[in-house]
Image (cartoon, rainbow, N blue to C red; front, side, top):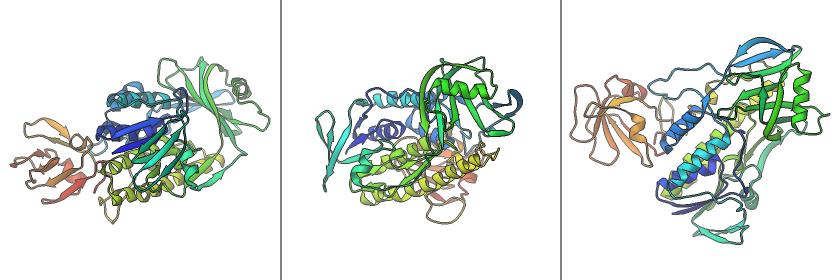
Length: 458
């Protein structure tokens, strides 16, 4: 199986890693001559951390990132309170990574590129997909370098202005509000404690302020977000500095490392697949930054699609659009609602709730607490030698996993009996010493559970 991926952001890189570890031939190109250098999507949700653990990059992400900071709120130049986007939650047996994690997008991409290189695959920059044709057997892609590439499948992970989506003629349904402009970027801020985030605003309009959030890394930069007025004609460091000065922030900025102007853009592709060509990430759905959902949704698109492409069966390939388009529509609704509340001045709109962690994403086909399509929970168990392991350890890798609770399991690859203390079995088994596994899966003796390669109940 060979797959051609257009776009080397988090979505394209995640997909490439998943395919490469399955032994597929994969090629990743990106039209940019240099790799992106900026924070942009810097919030990694708990479900994304679970995906990254399976892909072998979690340790690097945790080492290089940081927890969500406490924000110091200043009104009219005076400190008035501390606020959090979300209260930190303790790990539980079924949710090992309950809190969002901060890592600038460019650094996340670097971690993913390094992992992909371990499989012998490297991103090809300055290489743009300019067109393609498909037939019953594959896709023929034309590149800006003059090369023509033949592949079994093509995946467009090439962003909101996707050449793949436009070539397919797929509608990108939604709205863009050109009346709202926000300056985003990375900057140094003299005199601010890098352990905290900062919100500077007027007391009579506390929601229309400038946010500075510390980015992990040796540069000591902050990601900033500042509304631009109609009089702001230049998206520059001077514009941002003037905005802070009007708020009596007493902060001097320097070293603008990256910036962009964001407009409210909420869109969803009408189709995620046409024949042998697929859309994923921003090419399929455009999110506002509220709630920190865009990058994370793209990563999960890729995680859903990788094992299905490697398998190649028509039914599985059909299920990609069915499963992921529905999820994208739901997540867009969450982000759009948070954006609306923010624009209306709701002081709690910056807070992130349970529905932003993406742990409740479901492809379920029935009713009940845990049914087909739900995320498979984690739980601590012990192996026959008494060594502590986790169910996630059993699931890790490109395979599906089968658990048989309270009874011997067949002697088949990646099949385990989950037994109560004091019991053994003739074939591979683990012991649920503390009862968390039985509880997490609401299992009685004889219950059999199939976990798909992407960690959802089959």
